[in-house]
Each structure stands twice: as C-alpha cells, then as structure tokens.
Image (spheres, rainbow, N blue to C red):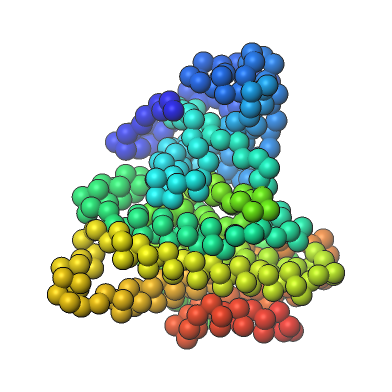
Length: 435
C-alpha cells in the first residue's frame, strides 16, 4: 500500500487551502491516466490504463466514487469533494477528511479484521483512496428497501460495533496511545460539525436547510415545542462533543454497510471521531427502525414477516454486541480502565461493573437512536427508506410513527430495559395513528 502521508500539524486552514490548490477532481475519461503510476494498481487491474473501464457510481453527498475495471480485476477509487454535493460549492468542506477516513479504515481493519475494504493506495493531496472492490455486495439500505434478507447481519455488525468500541478505548489501548489518537482525530473538525448541526440541532428549529413531508407540520411543531426533549438532545450533544470513550465510525447506517445474501462489510468512516461507545450502534438501530416503519410503502406481500425479520436484526445486533463485549472484557481488558488489580486480583468479579457500563452504553444508544430518527425526517439529509415512497399521503403517516417513537426513546431511554422492549415499542407505534 502506498501512502502519501500527512501530519496533524498541517491541518490548519492555510495547509488545506494549499492542498485544494493542487487538487483536481477526478473524471472518468482521465482517471486511468492520472492513476497509471500508482504502484501495483496496473497489476491489480490488468491491461493498459487507457483500456480500463471506468464507471462513476457514487450517490452520496460528499464524494466522487468510481469503479476501475480491467482484465485482471477491479478497484474502487473514492475522492473527497471540496463541498457538499447535495448543496453545491456554497457549502465548502475541507479535503483533509480523506486523511481521517484512511486512518479510521486502518484502525477498523486492525480491530476487526475483514470488516472493512482493503486499502491499496492513499493520496492526501488529491484526497483519494484506492480500495478493494466489493462484489457482489450491494448497499444494505437498497437491499432492505427491496425486501432482501442478509444471513448473519446482526451477528457480524454487532461484533463489529463491540470490537471497535472496546479495542478503540482505554479498556484495551494503552493510555498514551489512546490520548495521541484522540489528539490526531481532534483535527477532524468540519465533518463532525455537520453531525453537531444536522443531527443534534437543526431538527428542533426551523433551520434554513430543513425540509419535511407535507402533512407532518403538527407533529413537527410538537417536537420543537417540547423543551425537555430539546434539553435531552443537547445533553447528548454535550456527550458527543466532549466524551472520548472510543473511536467512532461516526456515520454507521444502512447506507454505510455493503452486503451480499450472507456477507457484510462496513464502509465510509469519514465522520470518524472519538465519542461515546453507544453512538454507532444507536445510529445504526435508528436506520433499522426507519426501514421497519417504511416497509408498508414498499411492499404488501410478506410485509409482516419482513418487518419481524428487521426487529430480529435489531435484537440480534444488541445481543451480539453484548456477547462480544463481554468476551473482550474477559480476554483483552489490558488498558487502564477497570484493571484486574482492582477486581480479579483481589478475588472480586468484574461482571457487575461491566453490566453497569453496558447499561450506560445502552441508554446512550437509545438516545442517539431517537435523535437520528428525527434528523433523517426533518433535517437536510433524508434517507431513501422514506424518500423513495412517492406518495406523500402514504409517506407522512409512516414518518410520523417514526418521529413519535424517536421522541419516546429520547425522553425515556432509562426506562427501556432491553432490545426486546425496544422492539415491542416499535410494534406498538407501527399500528398507531399519529397526528
């Protein structure tokens, strides 16, 4: 793997402006010529660069994504854009986020081998990463909209969340290593700021870029008039901004997971930062719940069965998370937190301490889940689960159920004992008429 390295000391405004001055957005017609000298790429793709087939496949808000195909194989090229694609160059973004995505992928690969694509090349000046092409994988969100099932999804992603949470924390890491990594990722300022605004703040007032489905005005007004709700959201924002428990993926949802019928990989950690352990699994759960609530807009046949499968995924994900976290607690608790000298070495069991910690993680996850359920309906970046339902008269009631369950999760996270109760709540709202 070739890496054109970049140091945190260069993460100021002047260096990013210099980087953008030499930056040139990729185009399919010239991509092969621009990458022809990347060591090992020609051998991996095969053939002469001028014969490579290049397809642009990105459908996200922040990046260009291409597939390069040759006689020997395929690779993916991802390049950061210097603006939010959804809005245009009126919303500029720093190119340095590719640096953090590269480092997040590197850490995820070491903490959960096989969970993320292999990286072949990173070029900081051009903000691009060349990585493994995942085939026949498809974006999980698209599979869920289509009513497809993924065997082992819950077990694989639950384990990923546990391994990255545990091994990225001072339960496992040496304190000096962890603090140095926190300092490095603290330079990723602009991208987490999007989360701070779009997720935690904008849904709860009439922000300029907000929009929502006609028919939701009354529900939206109820949320924005609820002072205690907004205070709880802001308290969670305080934890998100100031808590450095572990390195987060930062944007873990069904659009950042690729899957086949029985295999799963995680992609796109450019929102990586240190934060609360419950954040990633909470955001992911929200997206599963939005898929659940949106299903009547996508199918009639097999509706009940498929919705129940989605709830099984939620329960199974949390079960796998807790099981793997407990295993790591028993076998890899080598950091400064909950040291064995305070527990096992004195003949004391540490299971109650672990259970108390997991309870805090659970409550954070539920709160984040509720907030994400709000932002994906009310803020700038909606998701396709609801947005692909063409009829607003059908879409609005489904989104209203989602919004009101999110409200209950935020206000009552500490009262919900487990994932079984969470799924029972989803069933209750699924049959509700919300006005």
